[in-house]
Amino acid sequence: LYLLIATRTRFPTSLGIDNILQSKPLKKIPETLIYNTGNDYIMFSTKTGEQLGRMNAYITEWPPSKSYYPKEKETYTCLYIDGLIAFKKMQGVGKRFIEFAKEISKNSKANGKINILAWCLDDSKVCPQIFYHKMGFTTANKKHLAEILRLEKTNTKTPRLFGNWNIPTNMYLE
Image (cartoon, rainbow, N blue to C red; front, side, top):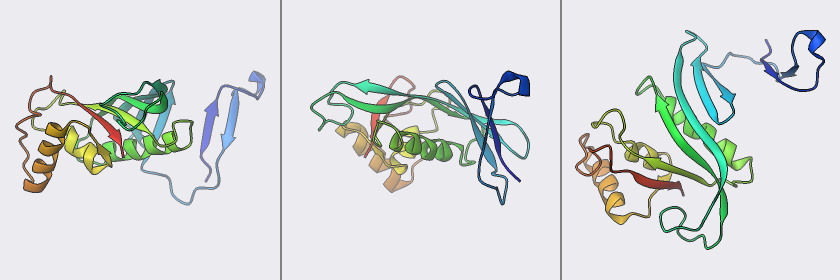
């Protein structure tokens, strides 16, 4: 069994497909596939075909700031995650997207740097800051970091500080 990926270069259109890249033989079909359209990454289940989540991310130049990579004194390149939504909660979708983003960042001129703005958009009981912290992100905001650590230590599900959607946290990969 081979995984075929269609792209838009190289083969003549008379073949019916612009281009086919062939991977190494697969021993097992992965449970999920991530499809990329520009800056949008869409994750699908290979078992059900349903869409599991979306991530918008792109490589960008970032000026020095106190919020992201505060030790950087010059403009640097990073992968900026502009949005990440898991349609299926507690199914590992977010974790797979972050692992995928880490690979994108490592294999690009971003050299492993990732910036993200974490906030509760759809469910005030879910604290994405804790999730991102567990995935290796931190924040330069000492008040926010103290709350993240308190929530992790007490295993509290209801955040005091992050329960409001308009309180975002600038986070970056350590």
